Amino acid sequence: MRENSIDLRLRSFDPIEYLSPELFDLIFQHLSPKELMNCSYVSRSWHEEIGNSQNMKRIKVFIYHHTQNELNESLSRLFLSERKYRNISVNLGTMMFDEKVEQIARESSVKYRNVKFSDAKLYNSLWPIELSV
Amino acid sequence: MDIDRPSDPQVSVVSSDGTMFHTTLKSILLSGTIKDMIEHIGEGGVENMGAIPLQNVDSKTLEIVIKWIEHHKDNIQPTSEEIKDKTADFIDPWDENFLEMDLDKLYNLITAANYLNIPQLLWLSTRKIAMLIKNRTPQEIRSLFNIEDDWTPQEIEAVQKENQWCEEK
Image 1: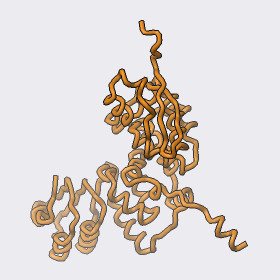
Image 2: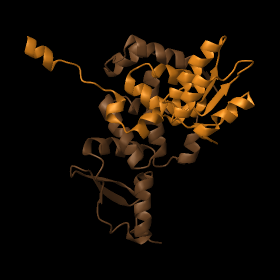
Image 3: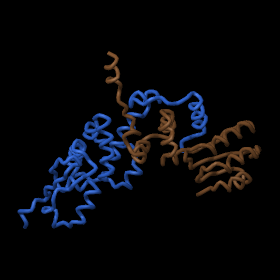
């Protein structure tokens, strides 16, 4: 019985194992950004592939924050993110872009496209991490 | 009038595992990859041309592809540029029915449609997978494809935080 149960183990039909990353990504052209985000929970590899997806350009990122700590946490997370975000909107308001976050930004190798910051000071301080348009 | 020459001459293709399939020129021209090959031979050479070897498509998959191209040989095919802007519009019931197949066959079909450069078939076959995913929870998607849940609770929490920024463009 035990040996049988090994034989009966279900085979995985994970599309990631069958398709090249380019073809896996084509599945998501048919799904909304909301569905895309839902799929990012499936597994680590789905999260990684979806983060690299061409379809990420359909996602618009808004950073919400109420306190300086929340802003720091969100920005740190953003700079460390491996997702290829293209449309990011950060409204700093009266908050400061503090040294700790700046350090993380500088060390981060992530390159963003079309990043829009509502605060010119922040934009300038981010310049060293290479903002490509 | 050249009555000996059929308007849609026969063409042969050979799968990676050595099986020969006969189809027609009109059908096979739906493949951009084969169309490019044939254009290099020139119109006059088609009848005398030998079987076309397809190193990347096995016989099971090639049989499925040929069934599709023969059904659609008289239909105008959208270009890959047109496909990019395409939204889910009317799907031919024949195609819906055609795509009812096991997942491993469907994955092979996607790979073959890409290699053979058949934009409409690639669009339809990837859409089929997308429709299976749509409106399902992550756990339902895992069950569907038998994917192992390899997240730790902390990691899931981090993804949730990142996802809450994201909005539809």
